[in-house]
Length: 177
Image (cartoon, rainbow, N blue to C red; front, side):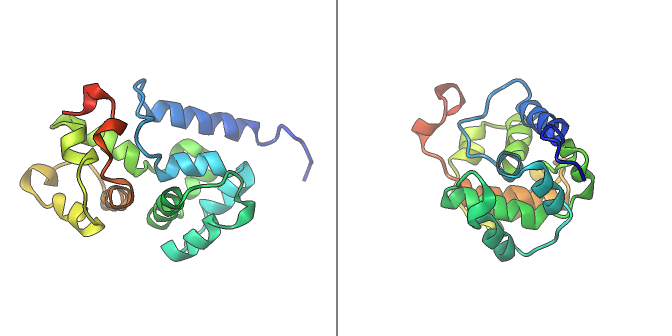
């Protein structure tokens, strides 16, 4: 194994591209970051390869996230968001070589799915509820046909439970209603 400082550069560039592509040219930076974005910000290339091959419970991931050596410090909601994302989506071995293969996180899913039928603010950002309420939302006739896997629906529910509701003043005026 060489000690080449540029060895992880292709992986880092790919990770940055994933984050930019996820926004689809529009910015949704006002929304709390999802697990994929948090993982790409906090895990180095070697850590990412380790993480995407591991399976742990949400509590075990939370302990892992809280270890002091994790790099960028995260707040409580960010820690919970990342641990939930990892518990729902890992392992994802294809992402070891291609960070673009990381599953979409709750923020990505909300941004991509909710706005096609209704206001993101009134239908998602301003809503409060636990994961069960969000899972049950997918049982409504008009939500059953949303093209999301069971894993993506669970990711969406966990992200929403942890990060919603948002205050109106935190959302850009053009997206409030």
